[in-house]
Each structure stands twice: as structure tokens, then as C-alpha cells.
Image (cartoon, rainbow, N blue to C red):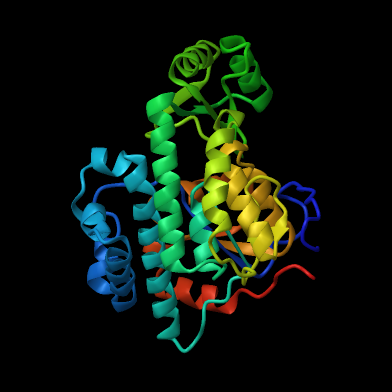
Length: 339
């Protein structure tokens, strides 16, 4: 598959799982108090990431991760650099542990869920860690400013098919102010919109048999309502140097394989106002040979999603990888797309 070729997802039962390795990075909502503290204590490589982030940002993001309250971590301007830093520390620790066995971590693909795509770009060396931190800090600022002007948010709807969720959005907001923001997998769809219409949609979904969870995010992200925010972010991104990602990234918004700096730059600028196609993203990696997925960051949400999307995949959490897992991960990788 070449860059910009649409992926045609297939069912999880078609074909055998491949030997390729994909690294996945979580987005906003994965944060929790104390995240990364154990990695800071036990890993020299992880500690260096936190120390470097504190220096780059000129404030102790490490203290916020380790000691910050749930409320502090939920503030968008804090959440995004905190998750990126913690995820990169987990990745550094994972690489450190594998290198101690005399092997290297050689992923075939990387992808991040929403804001996690910025971490993936850093991990794939498409953008420097320092610029990546500054970028998500700016993204968080833009989103926070937007939230003050037009408060809104996102909510996960469980147990309803997507067509029924779309109908809920249309019935709750005929003007289109509520819509599908993220397709996480079968029976799990995220909707987004301003507070009033979003609350109506949440109530309707519950009435129609869905289970609804409001996410700790105060911005109606991944909808056309955020076009102005996307334009502002694009100006900031255009001033930063990017490189071709190595390994390739897989797009959140098209499930295409991204192999050039310009493709990554466009992806990061556009996704704030476009829906995240996470299920298609995971299937694209599996269809290209990825049989193992590592959830590199706080929380376990991505691991659970992959299991629902692709039942035959091996799924690992970077925080819980044991010695046997390290051998498997070191033996996988470099099964990327033909170019």
C-alpha cells in the first residue's frame, strides 16, 4: 500500500494475524492522578523524559502528573502536555527494557487516538519532542479559549449502533450542532457538541437504550464547529519543522498510511474538526500486517478497543509488559506497507 491509498477494512476473522507491531498512544480522557510516577522512579530513560519536559515547558509538568488532582489534570491546557510526556516516558522505558535484552523495539506503524496522534508523531520522529510539547500546549490553549466562548464536550454512547446514534444527534439538534465525533468500534460511538444540544442528545440516547458516559473534556472536538480552531492551529503547525515519520503513522481521519512530513502536518491540523475513525485506523494496521498492538500511555482504553475491533490481535499495555512479553515484542516489527 502506498501513501494516500484508502484502506478497505476487512472483518477480524479474515486472514491470519501478522507479525507486524503497532504502537498506540492515548488521547485526552486517559489521564489520571499519579500517572507516570512509577516510571519516573524505576526507569532512567523515563526519568529523563520527565526532566526534559519540565525544562522545555518551564514549569513542572512532572509534578502535575504525579501529584496533580483529577480536576487539575482535566483542564485541557494541562491534560495534553501531561499525556504526551507520560506516554513518551512509557515508550522510553519500554525501549530501555527491550534494549537490556540485546534487542530493539522496531514497530511497523504508530497511531494515536485523537490528541495521541501528536504523541505518535513525536514517537515516529516526525517532530521533535520539544516542538511536540509546545504544539499540544498551544492546541490545549486554543481549545480552552474555544470552550470559554462556546462550552461543550463529548460523550460516549455504548450499546447502540452508529445509525441509531446519528438519528439521536439529528433529533436532538436538527441544526447539526451535535454529531458523531469518534467511531471507536462496534457499539461504542462518541458524540460531540455544545452543552445544551449535547445534553439533549445524551438524554435521548438513554431513552433509546444506550448507556451514556460524559467525557472529562470541555470542548466540542472533532466536529465542524471547530473549523476556526483548526485554522488557528494550522498556522502554528506551519511554522514548525516536520520530517517524514519512521515508521509510518496511520491516519485518524482517513485510515490511510502517512509517510511524508506534509501528510503528518495536515493530519494534525485537520483532526480537531474532523471525526476520528479509530476502528478503521486499527483495521488498517491489521490489514497491513500488524498482529501485535502496544498501548503506550496512561490507562487501558486503547487496549480494550483493539480487542473489540480485532479479536485475533495480541494486545499489550506498556505498563504491564512482563519478560515473556518483551521477547514477543522484540521479535515482531518491520512488517510495514510496501512503498
